[in-house]
Image 1 (cartoon, rainbow over the protein chains, first blue to last red):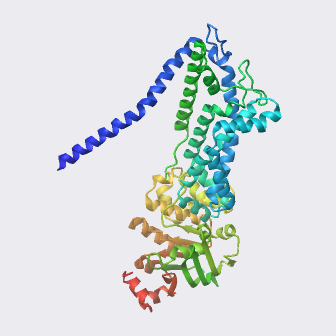
Image 2: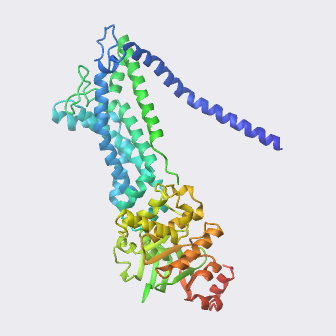
Image 3: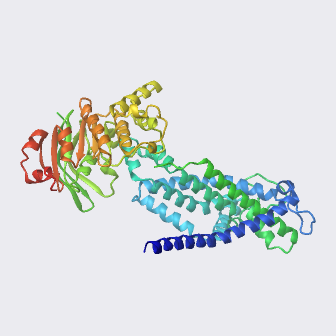
Length: 281
Length: 249
């Protein structure tokens, strides 16, 4: 009886390990393939991969993706504060006043935003920003990215704040903290790990978004621009365009760009893991 | 003069009536114990006093509550709470703050201490009052998860005391801690009554007998008996109080 229980335990452990390997294997395969192909290209191009313009279709040189790196950084830098700030305030509102009609409306809007196709967001921002400005721009791209990121930040932050046990909130009120004081001094610090993870996931979402930029950013690849009002490019947009092209050198650039994007994700994840400590309850 | 006066206080949460026309008088500088079986409304009664009942979705309070000369139900709850400390059933020190900060934050928010020196003094005083100072003086900058459950509860009491409250609400403060820490907490409570009025909820008749000056027995949302502790323990006049003291309910 006892040995059968032990055997079952072992079988169960083996099954869990096997299923875990099965689940991780495709992801590992993708990461390794991207790194193997991508880093070969980056190594061949050297530092010019980060500083040069993309190659012409028939070029022998790999060139670089500087305009796309600049555009991704610029649009992330503009869209992230918008999405994080609005998402955080909306999450605080709905966590603190869950039955308030405004909270219910904010919650419904945020959830419906998440279900709008990103290409549709791109078209809407095209009519609202690109047409009046008479130009594609990093700003238009960033607005589209912020709209797409907002439901993510809201959901992550809202879940993070609601996960703080109510006893801490009560303790804050019991020492005469105001509602705002309780949020700033207790709820946010206690949930800091989950909140930071939310920001990080949003960075990943924004950096990897393609469809939102199709009708907004402008695919500017003939120079490096940090102007919000000028057309811009983004790494995923470049990958999308180049991988669909028939040119071998552009395929190589796309591999290099994908590896760079993936590396950026992993570095941000690692940094968050190392820097932000979980609050032990 | 009473620290707390309640007249015909009823509390509803949704359609359910939790407190039924409760009338209570809690004299200043006494330890007033509220006893009663689970679900009799003891915690709700405490939360009416400091208006934490406002946090309960769908809660409605009727009647008149006077707390430290405040018309409690009509006053600004944040202003009211400046004078009322509270310790909860489950120890809940702020996990992101150090031991020192947990106590200091209450003093800072309520303007009890202005300079760093004053703050240090208040923190030391509060930790001494709760008999925690000797145990934590060398690790004031540790976090509360490094303390035992009982020490954490005494830290919560120190946090409440650092506000320099005039009224202290204790919601079954020893329910989740070991007997040694429970005894230390009781000693601290008794020593406090010269400075503060204590309202304590407890399940344990023996504990009530050790610390109480006055006792009220709550049953099914009603105060069925109240009076000086000695009188109530020696000659309980209602059957419910007798059963409660015998541990039958």
